[in-house]
Length: 82
Image (cartoon, rainbow, N blue to C red):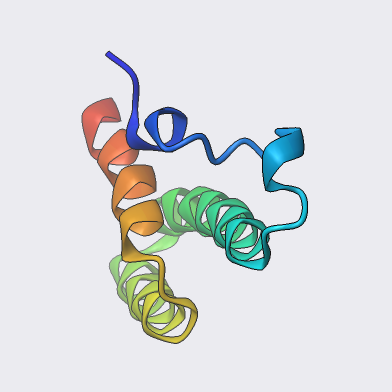
């Protein structure tokens, strides 16, 4: 089953999307979400307080950057790991 990212064709290498500002921004948010997911996983190993702080930082990013579907897609992948 394809994930949401693949279904809506968010691949930054697709030629059709190179000039689309919204698509470029969505790809930027995807990369940010991926990076923050990795950071969150690392914070869970440090302490509960660090994990809570990271969750709050991620929520702040979601509110400011938008594209909630991208964030949900990324974090659903994470929940399947555990």
